[in-house]
Image 1 (cartoon, helix red, strand yellow):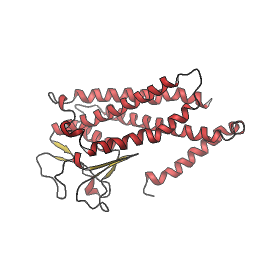
Image 2 (cartoon, one colour; image 1 turned 90 degrees about the vertical axis):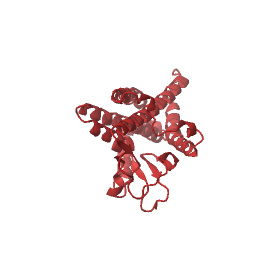
Image 3 (cartoon, helix red, strand yellow; image 1 turned 30 degrees about the vertical axis):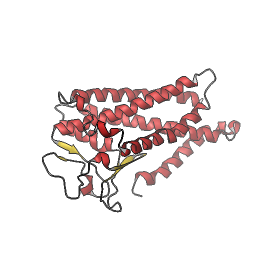
Image 4 (cartoon, helix red, strand yellow; image 1 turned 60 degrees about the horizontal axis):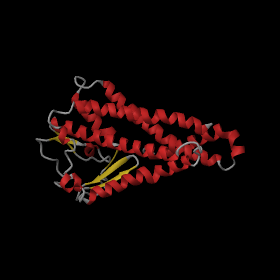
Length: 267
């Protein structure tokens, strides 16, 4: 019953946010300055993109975080697949949707960078430790603040994590400035772009839609992971555990919530 319910719910928490992301990308693309559509990747130098080692390191990090961690959840769910269901078809759908979401996310981020550049702002890296390190964009006509390296960001060390990204500037003391910031797309790029455009060009609806999409993606990810945990516990003794399915689900979720608090707060 739980697996059947999960199969129905997953359609809502995957297809709806994917469609919403597509609509949001289309909206921001319409606000992109004329003549700059062919420059939607302003920070990328394609002549050196495939020979830059930083690009391959960043790509390998993304592959591990996407398939190394969540791939195990997909395999566990597939183990409970009914014989009449086409596993190859379902797997192909998961892979295609994953690529679509990643491409849409990259497209959305670069569109925001392009809009910021058109309005005279340059997006830079930030770090969470100090308020002075929160600055993530500066005016193009003003010189870079003291301490900022002239090294292009594409040559800086990038490291992706589950909930953020770390960009280390050359010559920086990492014990003082880590270069880490959580969810740069949600906390920096999109809010800055929408604030810069103003309500005259962008309705507040689009900001609500963006964060609603993130909430749905987050719930979908947690459903996929915790579905594996619950079914794994139930597999210990299916007949006995079936009677306690609701209780096991509640207490396992409560336990995960408590264990996750130190990761989301300063506790």
